[in-house]
Amino acid sequence: MEIHHAIFVTSSAKTEQCPKPDKPEYAFIGRSNVGKSSLINMLTGRRKLAKVSGSPGKTILINHFIIDDSWYLVDLPGYGYAKRSKTERAKWQKIIRNYILTRTNLLNLFLLIDIRHELQKNDLEFMVWLAVSQIPFTIVFTKSDKLKLNQLDKNVKAYKKRLLEDWEELPHMMVTSSQDKKGRDELLEFISETNGLFTN
Image (cartoon, rainbow, N blue to C red; front, side):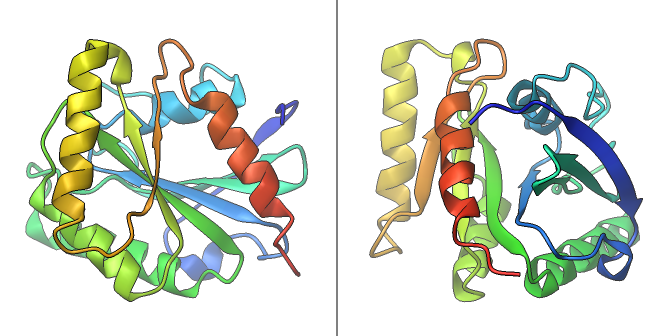
């Protein structure tokens, strides 16, 4: 699949303000500074579609983009950024969880993980919550270009080993890099195939 048009639609402070759920939808989420905006821009081929910031925690709303007038790409607020107040973090968490649980056209959640680091507690807790809530999700490892191939392979295996301690079956995983476009075709093909499952 190739993307020809990617257009910003709206920013919503709560799920009720989101566009009508009449098209397939895919949401992107991850810890602050995981490279979410860069990945979205790489996927869509638009350098400034999602705002890239040097300040973690920039995205604080549910941002909808319409792709080729056929599906929605959603940029969700990042989580785990300690410099935001407890009240703010709790508010974001409520917004995010309500969106994930109630958005009827959400076909898959892409959970972004920086492959350079070990599995973080809040990432693991979020994965478990998604699984218990029966939300389809894909682990998308980012920034793979920052590691040598043998270290990259080692880190991915470490994630799989850790998850298999608690999971009978591993979630779907992809390895990406916004710098060299690694994983772009695989991710877009996954979306293309999943779009066929959507019933309005």
